[in-house]
Image 1: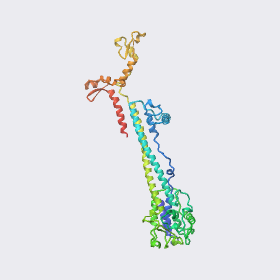
Image 2: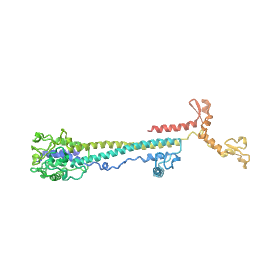
Image 3: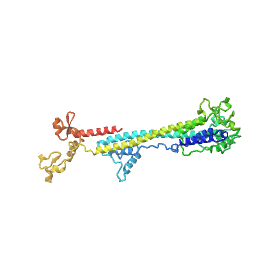
Image 4: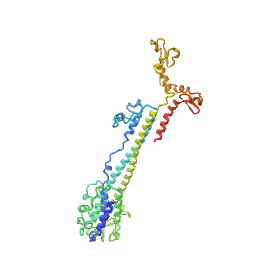
Length: 478
């Protein structure tokens, strides 16, 4: 905005100077200079040279998923999301070597609890969802880079007619009169900002100070070759200083086009059947031959076929560039939103992991079912066969009289599994002690709980409900 104000003040100051007739094209020069400055503003090199697929899934999401892999599969060559041996090995190294300042592991494996499988599923869903977003973001990055490159090519073309951005040479200009009276064939009449400036500010006679003080350009007069246009442009463009800190901007381009549109038109022009609507430059000439100051102009009448200045090639270039830069700005906003989602997904991964830790730390219904295996010493205390009950066994031939009653380890393990709900028929056996009891008796019986009008083993209920609770909570996070 500040640069626009400065430019306006500069224009007003020039218009206020005495000898206005000597600078009769200053307004038009100012309009072309504004357009040239907007066109020469560079597109961000970060966009033009952006790498392919810059977005990667956060390491934490992958690593936390690995913490939930069952112990029995953790040392496999492949598992779940890790389709190659190298991928799996890399993430194992990440878990092993990523530590805090206090040398504590950042990614600790989840204990083998009922919640672990639910955490694995939740983290896998989160990983897949995030990868979909990563792919979307990377595709947008590719679109963004393409738009930036296309916008830059349009801007280069607007300046000299060459999309590569190389310095202007004679081939970028046309000889008189074609260069200043374009017919709508850009390859022939070179409709560029450089060509327009040479036409506007150079004449065979009275060419001094047509557009500004300090430059006398007579090299591109009547019948001059394209080399004369290059010489004129080189001198003229030096008066249009470039702000190298200002990047290409769609609004600046649009404002420049509006300024040019306001400057276009010459009611004194006597050519085109006295139709000077699309003539840039003052003077009462009947053609833009640049023989003198009266004919130092650009006649776009032949180039504009349908009353639209967008038919002027360099104007169309700027409009197209502005449109692509606007699309690029929208893409950048969309990419920023996706990048924020990636951070949210990483935070969610940690929330899932912490939830699994909390559940693992909760004691799991030990009152009724998960009894510890009877110690050997309890059996040794029994001094006769009648008191030596399972899982103990009596051996009259034992050499140590204090150990005739000893622990039957196989029977003890079987009973422990049944108590924990893991052995064959365990659930049925554990339910037997509660089955048939009324509500009052059930409430006073250790390990039993009244539910759905029946007395049931509380440890079985707890183990069944735990996975459901964790699953429900983790699902609610998405």
